[in-house]
Image (cartoon, rainbow, N blue to C red; front, side, top):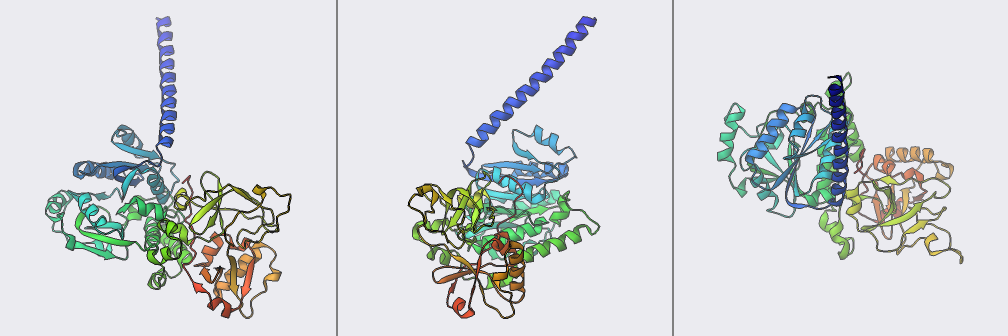
Length: 500
């Protein structure tokens, strides 16, 4: 009996060891296949659901999608370390649902970006687990999206208090919502209307809109402001937002951030404190967003007219980034931004004796800019990436040691203002950073200037995001600046914490 017991224990150990060995092989194989299929899309819709400790609502949400969605689709759930059994549920649903299980300290916006990276559909839905879809919901949204190529994002109407998207409903419970939707969700182009904003409980967007706009900004502290930030970038590209008034979805919660109860939502002030902090970040990044959009004279058509026809189709959020800046993607490769394109560099060394670090951008931003089909180049040690100033190449220099450029790069410039400190005394980036902050306070503006044009850094935050304090800044008379045509502003890139 003792020998039999030992055999059983040994058998269990081998069985357990074999299980984990198989699990490891399967994981490695899945990783290889996933990498090989990255970038491949299918003619369908990717439905992305970020979730945190909402097992009951998540289960109901997925069930309603399966019940009411006839279009080809995939469901992607990104969980932020739930402790309510969500992990076990997703493992059991692994055939019908793709999922990612993240650490519990991942912010809601970071989990959404993870889902966007995983999406393979030609169109994408960002869905709150508290949103319960109804019959023909996706058909109606897709009709609206495809009705006009200028439409970038579409949202439905709902019973929840979401501004223009709220409608009066005759029912009192979720079961009655199904019957209401059957008669409400009918084809009716007259019910579509353009809007200036959309609530994030359900957003339908084309893959092209995502690729041109980029990921959500993880520097925002709430889902609502992250949605507003991303939608503002959509509008900057000249894309329109629309409400499909004949697509109804039932919502069980009125406050997206309260519903998510993100693990980062802490502090004595609770959600009110976080909302205040995030609003401060939003204003810091954009300034007066309404004023910016009201005075917008650089929509997609105008932007395309400013670059060559062959590059016009590549207009994206990266078009609002500074020319000449050094950027680094998730792979670690370093590029220099040029008009409508990017150039791969062997390395980026110090400029003018000062270390200049590349700015982290997403893979989407990089892919939106075509790669210059020329040999890689190296920036010399005393080359200024922004001003384009480099010493004459010696006769003994190798081709890879000199900068290959078809046109001079623009410089950073600011107006000469009375009582402003002189730049000659600003020897270190910290001093220049303070100077830039003072410049904006007194009504000045930091620009990039080129051949007959100037581009303003939208806010001090945008200037700091692009490490403007690391580069030399020229003082230009207000008169000379006013003679330059003002083009689209320079905005800050989204903050990203993941490998995106």
